[in-house]
Length: 120
Image (cartoon, rainbow, N blue to C red; front, side, top):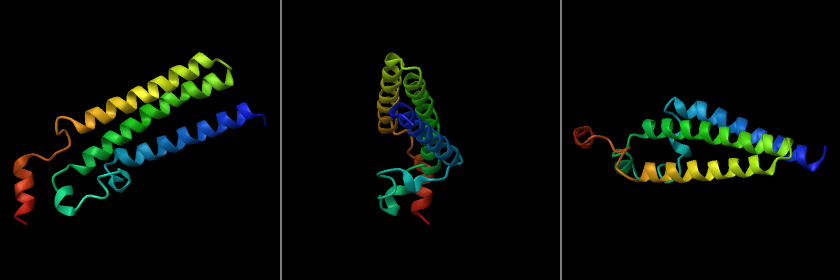
């Protein structure tokens, strides 16, 4: 195989793995894979809705796998502009997801639920 096909095969494999991992995380599982969340103390984790965070990451993985299709098609058709559009979309969605997750307290549990867990 030439280098182009090898690269396309690698990108396709990574996209498939991202889709499979996205399916797992859409079920609300896999919080141990989320950097930062998996290293929090139990008291700190109790403040966050882990399954909601995992579902969001699962959706993000689907979107990122879709952007990788641009890489794949661009490589196979030797259209560099498609590859660059895919990279720009990948970086844009990643940046937007980071901003979304880290602003507004979107994944914090409501205060009454947090108080209830503290009393247990």
